Amino acid sequence: MRRWSNRKSELKSVLQRQVPRVRAWLYVIVAVLGLTGLSSFRVNLSGFPSWVNALNWDQLLGNTLVLVLLVILWAGYLHLRQPELMTKTRMRAFLVSLLIVVALLGRATDLLAPYLVPVQMGAYLVPIAFGVGLATIFTSAEVGLAMTVLLAFWVVSFWVGLGNLLNPDELGDPLHSPLAAMLAAFGSGAVAVFRCAHLRKFSDLPLTGLEIGIVGALLHGGIVLYSGGEALNGVALLWSGLNGLMSVLLMFGGLPLAEYITQKTSPLGMVELLNPSHPLLVLLREHAPGTYHHSFNVADLAENAAQAIEADPLLAKVGGYYHDIGKVKRPQFFAENQQNGHNPHDEISPNMSKVILTSHIKEGVELAREYGLRDDIVQFIRQHHGTSVIRYFYFKALREGKASAQSVDDYRYSAELPRTRETAIVMLADGVEAASRSAKDAAQLERIVSEAMSGPLKDEQLKESPLTLRDLEKIKQAFFETLRAMRHDRVSSYPKESELKSTPR
Image 1 (cartoon, rainbow, N blue to C red):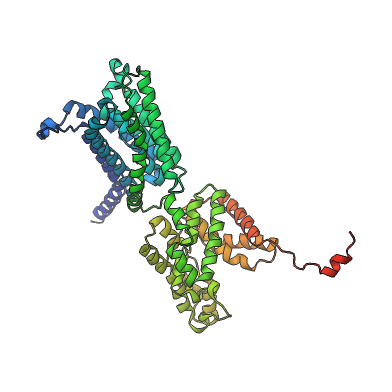
Image 2: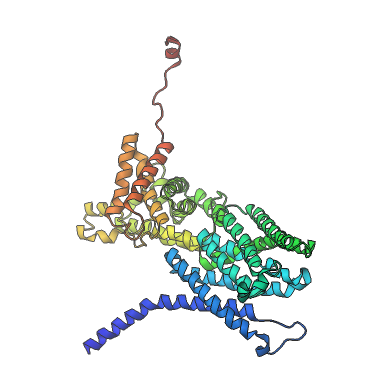
């Protein structure tokens, strides 16, 4: 009986480990079915045909075989190069959704193209830059380029058929050439990747669309001229140029939905969160001014440290701004907001102080949700204290006989440990900024920074983060240089005017 129970638990464990792989394959299957189905389905506008007659079965089978291989290679490449990305269900769903949406837009283009451009030019109107741009914004340029390759092959399969890549007769006519269609798709997709990888302002979107459109129009015109120029059509050229602007409009409209699906803030959204007039920052400034200034200092420290180890400085800075927003509920219980020497903790027990201090994590998460912050920002609130000990009140309880040496865990935060480089940096910056206020000179500042960083390391608060010892050394140096610039040594006493007059010149 015991042996059967052990085997049952082992089987359950194996199945649980296989669940992510099964889900990943399901996403691949959905992507393939969506792309191939939408590629092969043809609608007769004069009369809707039966289901059997509506499918081009030869093309469906051929495209399916090739696209299955391409999608598997694409998913395998991303899993190899971006393993942390492909383990996230939301991100996999987002990427597959982008492929399906671009395929739907391709279908719409197929229906509208005959009324806009010569039918053979329809491939140049498919807005793949929309999908590629969003993929780049929410993942990386590498993922965007991989999607460009996949969608370029899809455009060929959709408009001229993948089989025509091997047909010498088709390659001879640039207007119908699958290589020409693929070149146009590569061109617009590559521009979208290069521009969207560094997109920081909404005002940059029109320029991005203009550049995509110019490249599309130039490729269109070049291909037509290469064929002899007989089919050069001004309207078709205009629509090829407008493809970039249409892609950007779709991208702009899709940003909020993409943020919701991925629970990740786009760089454009992060820039908005850095605006001091953001309602949450205004609330923090009005109710907890000390915490507000502390958060800005933490953000500066985190940004410089993230740059030093090539993490995401923008994400680290935004996380620094919002990590302590939960303190607006009871600001007077936090040292940076206390004035006139009054400390309300003197009037309550150490255990109650612990409850109040730790509650700012939960209250911060609730506020973040209320104001629409995404998971990638909320994680800074959850993880910036980890499970660290509130040492002051633990030792106070020891002195008052209300705690024992064994009850140290009762005075820990019951939160999450940092799991990313950026959240770990903000945890370290939070402690360093608070400790550095007592520094009187550069030597003392350097010692305080070292001690403040060694504490979380010894307490195993960083064991789930990907930071290396080399990273920690770079972070420490960045903290020291930033704090030294913030608290630069001033001349302690200036000479009197009489002394200046008596000084020989």
